[in-house]
Length: 336
Image (tube, rainbow, N blue to C red; front, top):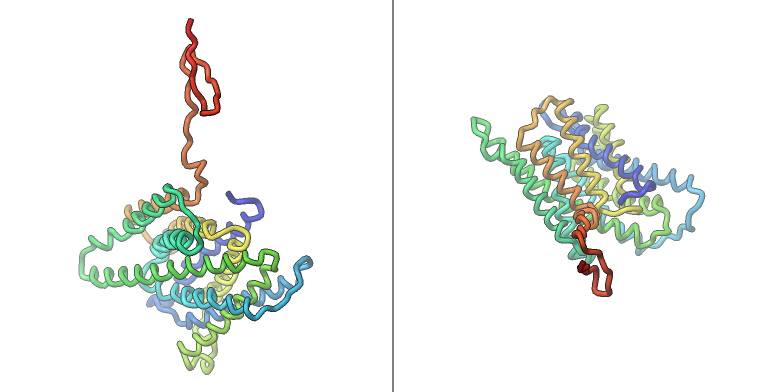
């Protein structure tokens, strides 16, 4: 269960994850394309995160002495590379599917998180959690029913977009789960280290990867300027992603990946409501049903086992009294 110390990070992450796909959609032009370089957006996000972390580290009064360790710093390159690919993948995924569908399909990260916990970290799952994973798969499949039965002149193009959106989202879910698990291990291996110092090591690699990605993606980016094509909403995406990265890091440090997945499930539901209000989207019955199924699955997956089954206490028949023995609770009938 969440503690009062963990709750602020979780609530912040819910709000920021809800805003992420909405802000990316708002930053697109009239043709649904991005005028700015998405890789440069991620680079600016990493720069903002490391700047905030450095300021927080400077203001931190109680912390262990910082002893740079090249070997430890090298380990942070692994999740940084994973996050680099995944963060940029979001921009391209949202070109094929809408924000609500992306949030819904992204719940597949629960499946990959559970599997990676089981096979790589040795974390065992209960039968109810495996059932929740199956329920999650059914929920995500339900969201594609309208795409499968759609008809009309544009049905072929819509089906193609849906297919590529699904593929990109599944890849993103695998990367998100892997990066989250590896980051949690690094952050908790040295629990006494300042989270801001650990973030600086992680984001330093992120800056390097995204700088290379920016140059490779657009060799003329520095001639036109790294901020070419940016509008208000593009800058809002950068700020939102930076704060969201810091919030997720805090969740992994002080809670775990399961809490992170649960926060994403709540953000998914809120995103659906905001998409209807802001973009005038009409949610189909299949989509509404899928959101409810996925939301219930996320709750079931994260619920403590003792809360999953609420067995009523056995009633003592008339004329009988309970008698506790070493073997358990037995009933002894009293004869009149």
